[in-house]
Image: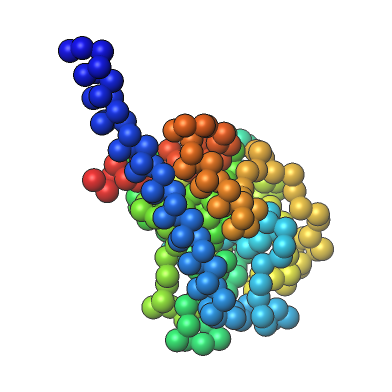
Length: 275
């Protein structure tokens, strides 16, 4: 084969992949914009007492970070549903070995209008079986968008990993109430939820429906704990769009961040699994 023929073959095989990568990221930008439009007409959400119109704080790491009812958590005695965990249960962790549960926070959100969809910050993100690695998670995992997974040495909110295939928002339209739980250890760490590495509770706040139980046990919560690993996330939809633009042009000029690379890798994995 001549040099000219080889170059022509390269052009025909590589360029469609580049175009596909560009188109995929442009479509993702459209999906981000569509989510913003949907949120403008979504439910106001009734949270715990004292917070009738729940909305996430401005600073990202303080937003609700929880696991949906029914999530299986690894304990020394085997997997157990998160709502069945109690103080004193022992969990294997990534950083601290076997550690004791101090408290399990409970958070309930209700629709103000059953006909409207859930707001994007409240509805769960579905992380499909094997989305992160073979059999990780071992079955579909549902977390809030700001709940962090431990991936490639960093903590990443699930919402920053959305790829439209194996990691995507779940509408939960069939539910008028969403019940989330979160595990508090003596300090921030990573536990195993459906086999995937997920963060523990980093800050106790009065928004938990069972906050009184925590207060009786431990008194006033201390300041937010130091994270057990570096935290990376996109700041709002502008940050998400900027990331997608970096990925779109990366075949020609690669300026992607570590988070961009993680998201793109999991997106490629999702497409391969769907094929």
